[in-house]
Image 1 (spheres, helix red, strand yellow):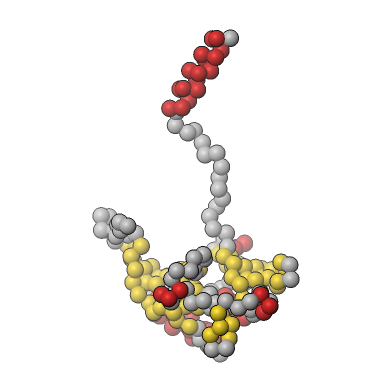
Image 2 (tube, rainbow, N blue to C red):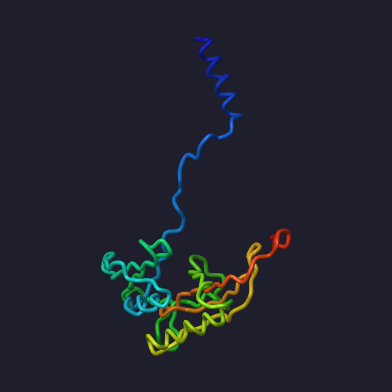
Length: 196
């Protein structure tokens, strides 16, 4: 019995120094979708069609009307869930007499925690973000007779070694949408390593 106990202790001790041989769990394939609340589900579906999201299905969650939008085969390029919130659910803020979400790009609202925005890579649309933004606005006018609210004009930003043009717009509900256009990549050793 003592031999078995010593052998058990010896094996346990040896295993404590062994590197892990496998990952215990695969925690998924990455972000699956973003969900946006709206007062007008049809207008939201139309807005997201600007980015080539198509209606995959309509469904209900309790009393709320919902829509599942996808881009690419089976949503592999992106998924957006739209939930229509009844007016009795309370308004987050009222601007000019219309209900809308808080403008999270406004520095006065920077302390609000939670989901901030959804980002769309538009690098394949046009040569620069200003051109992509102009093209998107023209398309919006053609489809809906109106443009969209630009919260932050295009500017360059380094993220790691990549240089991006970024801007922020709002959808028809006031949700913040970031548009990104990849400009280039810094050479090795020239990245922006930020210490905070």
